[in-house]
Image (cartoon, rainbow, N blue to C red; front, top):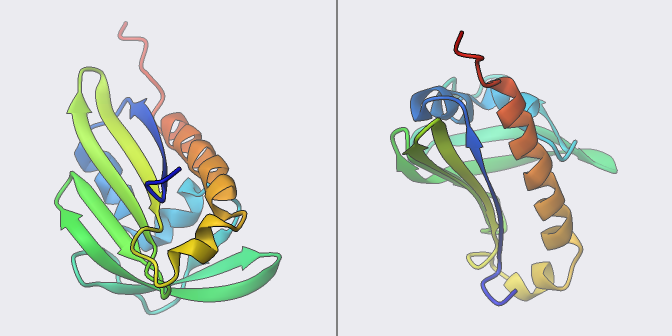
Length: 148
């Protein structure tokens, strides 16, 4: 993939505001994560993410580690993205549609310091799998009501 991005999209039976509230609360990220790598927000971090916010996460990929992120894209209830130390980004776009919200999660390494290293690694394929599982989890958090 020449774009140096992998994405997944689902329609979630919830308003953009409900989903955005989860995305901007670092303490909820482990609940959303389908990759199994996000363990939780580091203590003392922000309760709500906004443009420029720095937040730490406890992670595990084989061995436990910590990562510091910075919010680099932000549009209330529509878009949020955070950057890791290497410059790659995790981006969430929310678009209201009939029946809920179209949610697109993207792993974007076009902004990485050395994007070629990520391109030749297992990360794009593994992160695509994690994105699909995360979106499935998100859909499951807002089951469609029967309307009766």
